[in-house]
Length: 129
Image (cartoon, rainbow, N blue to C red; front, top):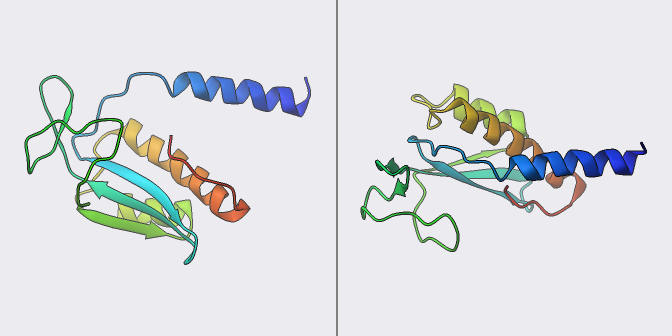
């Protein structure tokens, strides 16, 4: 198998896993983006409440936060870092209590921060998974 076929197989595995159900973190969610002008990975943290149906609710309005489309909310915290590791240290080690309460959410964020760092270095587009 050549490198291209290997990359395609690995991408297919990740694409399939991206479709699985995951529970929402009661600690909130993050919107990740790059600020290329200053060379930073940015992660806006938003608080939420998870209702008995497993849906994220805006704690201010009591309304369901849609998974798709534009949502006008103000983040509770903006975390930034020049590398994935710097951002992880700020969120998981220097912020108490941590805004992340689930291990699978922490693992997801770590993967996304590495992807964002690679895009920052390579100049490629970054779109959060």
